[in-house]
Image (cartoon, rainbow over all chains, first blue to last red; front, top):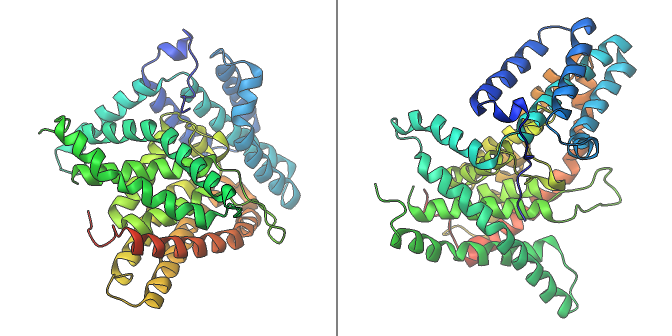
Length: 201
Length: 187
């Protein structure tokens, strides 16, 4: 049910280390906002689109994934065109679309577990100050992925129970039992985790 | 945090993900569809309190960042944070925290029913709406270039839907406090 957005492949971007990709993305995010020169922004957009498609994602899937974000970018660009100038609209559109496509390219070429390993490594320095334990974060991520299908099935059961009694399925009357039933499991799950010694430190 | 707290945070994050899988509701008098996911942010604060509530939301954002399609409409990946509306997501974390702070402070079990209702409503409006917009609008303004005023103004169409969500969060928050109180035992 919860599948990652990464695409299998061996493109240069796939082989690049996660940290490198994130640094490039971060630098791009800063540089793109420094200029409004279309001679720089338009080629950047073309380059970003080429990089995104070079991941082997396919045009249709690429469009499906970015259409919602690109739609908000288009709205912002349209506002610039209506209230300011065409130049400003094009600059905003190119700048934001470039960033969105680059970010989507990083997501498409980085597997969930690879990314999680990198996050764990980045969190380790924080451990020393006692903010968070990196192992706990991985545990929590695993728990969410494990329990989403179960909670969704529980929601369907509650909705069915409403229908069987001829009641309309309203957010309020489904949410409260869903939350109480789900959180009541917490004790059992916590006990199961402790019994297996997953968190011995 | 105890193991139980971590499990509660993870389960609530899973509930927020499930809320994004439900179809959005359209109401005649509001121009935009209402998704239940941002309701989850208010609920996280109202039910789990400040620290665990913010933790649950942060966990959802971590899943988004590592590339899981956990936001409403199957959205996910780093592109979401690069979008003009990314600030609202960052605001969710602080929103859930503030919502939890207010709920912890004022929605005590020994208080009357009306006080609890009002506390949850205030928590949802201040944390779940005001704080979220406090992060969302400056981000949008920064990303919008010169048309910042117009785009910031346009984002106000979401306020009526958010007020309805705050109302639902108030009722659900109070119902959970009565049925299975977690707010008093803080992380």
